[in-house]
Length: 269
Image (cartoon, rainbow, N blue to C red; front, side, top):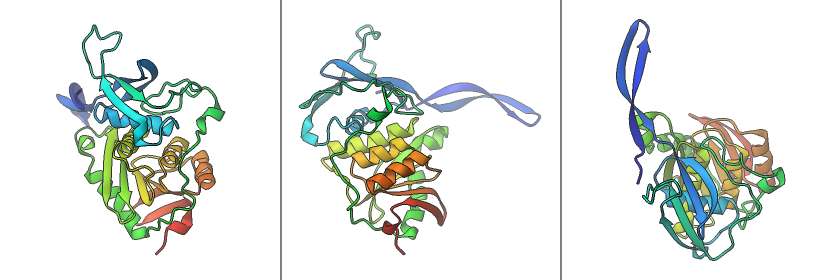
């Protein structure tokens, strides 16, 4: 597997003081995802948990929704790798057909930049969340950002990674993943759940370290997650989609304060 961090020389300027020293950076490399030998997407990601990432990506795109639809995954050499396995190409075998309607190319900052049309963004979920009976207290929610931050081991070294954490309704941390892309971190969590046979993720809370975008709401909905919480702001389209899904969407979750943009009935004192 590729390294999660690398060392690079940096010139540090602090007031009148200048010093040259090594700095630790988060690695960003491309991952080509293939289905049956055919490339379907290239995403920029932090190496690690690549199989979770690929599985979660296919859940988000509505290609798979059950563990038995994913037969196998393996690393292979890419066209430019001179026959050497660089662990940047992953080939999957499925029991279902790969997607044909999306022009996939994702970056570490936005996962839907390659979408062929706006209509194609709204994938069809296998799991509804509107009737999920989850309830959470403000006190439980307020504890999640610190618990997420405590698990960000690579962020401690680089300051350059997003994180997504899946919590039970009782506040138990079930899975935490880091990546340079916030959408990749979520896909890694969802892919872990698929491979563990845990979908749909009923009664759970997804906590993310950045903002709440349309895409993250969509990914949560595709995995059957009834509550998405973020430390920063949601977008208008994220709020619209959360309302459409019947999902609880929380933003600016900092300390004991938060904004509940959708599904406030699940937040009970």
